Amino acid sequence: MSQFHLIAPSGYCINQDAAQRGVQRLLESGHRVENQTIIPRRLQRFAGTEAQRLNDINNLVNLKGANQIVLAVRGGYGASRLLESIDWQGLAKRQQQDPLLICGHSDFTAIQLGLLALHNVITFSGPMLAGNFGAPELDGFTQEHFWRALQNSTYSVEWQGNGPHWECEGQLWGGNLAMLVSLIGTPWLPQIEDGILVLEDINEHPFRVERMLLQLYHAGILGRQSAIVLGSFSGSAPNDYDAGYSLETMVDFIRSRLDIPVITGLDFGHEQQTVTLPLGAQATLTHNNSGSRLTLSGHPVLKA
Image (cartoon, rainbow, N blue to C red; front, side, top):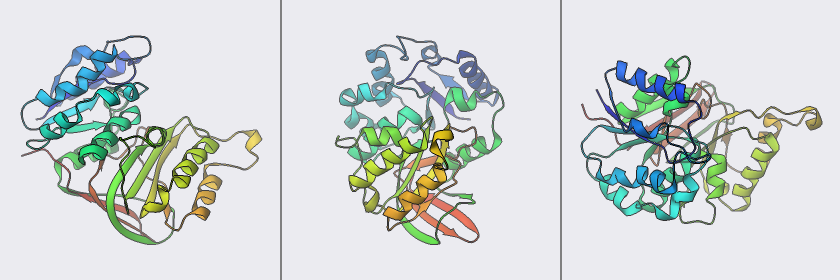
C-alpha cells in the first residue's frame, strides 16, 4: 500500500468531517496517512499562517522514500500568496529520484503550473482529500481513474466529447482556468507550444468563463496550442437575463475565433466524477465518431 502525505497550502477546510472521512477511508484501504495535524489548522480563511502553508510545500524537499503520494486537503484560495517564496529548485531536485506523486486541483493549480513552468515537473490534477476522498459517497469512477493514472506509465481516458474530428500530440497542461489566467505575465505560467490545454472551473457564470478564455486568446496562448479540452464548469447555470446565452453558445463563440478544436465534455474538475490528469505529460488526443480519447505517458508512477 501507499503512503499519503497531506498538505494544505490554500484555504481552511470548512468541512472537517469530510476530511476525517477521507483519512478514515484511506486508512481502511491499508494506506498510511501522514501529516494529519494540518487538517484543522486555520488563520482567517486560510489553512494556517503563510509560514505554515509555505512549509507544507517547501518541506516536501525532505520527504524521503518511494511511493509517496502528496495530497492537497482542499483548494479555496491561498497558493498565490506563496509563489515567490517556494523552493522551486529544491522541489525539482527532489523529483529526480523516487519522485513524489503530487495531486490536487483548484487553487493548487498555481503551484502545479509553477513547477511545470520552471522545472518541467509533472504533477497530477485530480482528487483532493476533503472534496473527493471524503465525499459522502466515494465515487468509483474518480477512484478508479486516480489509481489508473498513478499506477500506469501509459494510460487512456475516454469520453463522449463534442467537437470536430481531430488527432494531435503534445504536452498536456492546464487545470483550473481562473488560476491559470491569474499567472499570465508571471514566471509561473508554462510557455508551451503545440500543447493540449485542459481547463475546468467552478462557480463562474458563462460570461466570466468566456472573458477568461478571451484573455488567453488575446494573449496568444490559445492559438499556440494544438487543441483545447474543456472539463466541467460546475455552477455555471445561466439566468433569465442571459436570454439563451449559455455555456454551449459561449463555447461556439470561442470556437469561431480559433483554428484549433475545442473538445468538450470531459469529466474533469470540481464535480464528484473526475479523471486524474498528469500536467506536463505527453498526450495524444483523438476525437472522432466513436468519441474522445486522451492517451498519456511520461509521468511518474507508483513502483511495484
